[in-house]
Length: 386
Image (cartoon, rainbow, N blue to C red):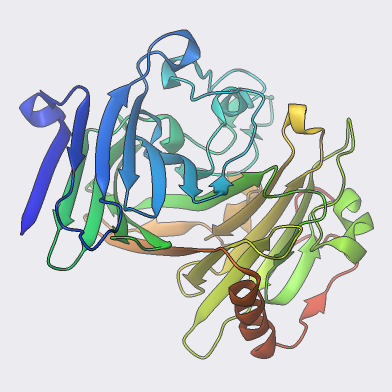
């Protein structure tokens, strides 16, 4: 049996306020799947829609108003989120993306999972006269979805969230992002599958990076990451100083600079790179897997500020490094789409909730790859800041 719920459809003027549904597709004492949508009221969150997908084991809060980012994920006693100084989801109308310093994107940054792109995804880019060309991390995370749907296939025990977002500008671009979040009843796994289509009659260039941001208590100072790599490069001199502990999250340091490492990810025999963030006790982990054919680059971001100021660890698969768009184009890392051409990107997540599973997965990653090359300092082809 198929249950399909259209929650938002701007073409047909559909908006389902306060939607709730409980599945009848799960039995034998298993907690049923539940789906809901509500609109937040008051403060900076006023007007932000939240869609909750609960498969019976894990629950995910998705924000259609903010580019279908994932605000947080819960699985038993595991909560994947971070404590942004912004405190709660911010309506895009209150995010000054194009303020002169190019950093307005940070006014709305709160989500565990967020996309950066599509026209640009890196540092603010300015022309020779200091005029802002491209703001930090692009626009896609601050564009509301035009279409949102939940589809439940009870025979396959599958749940699929679909969102459509359009990033457009007259004379410049016309992109469609179709996202599917797919999970199964009572499963600790979910998949994000994004398809980007160039709707223009002309060839267009794009960039794409995913921020997967986890903070305390899961990402505590004693936590660590596992990233198999062929090459690791510190983005800055500050990161170079942290090289001996690149895989450790490290203590809170008030007023510290961010630490970023760039990677050429290593893959297994199936072309998959599997990364992990492991908690301090080693009995909980979130696993992020992706194909290197889709994501040839990876970044690890550590903000070691006090938790009140945004202590967080970011795992970031990407098609380019988050330098300025001008620099990335000079290095040949800008992607292109012909008219009506599409590209699909897939990220797979799994939550591990016991030390045996964590140890087994970490061993699998380390067994297929010997240690790659570590550069002692930034290199000019990868890092614009050196």
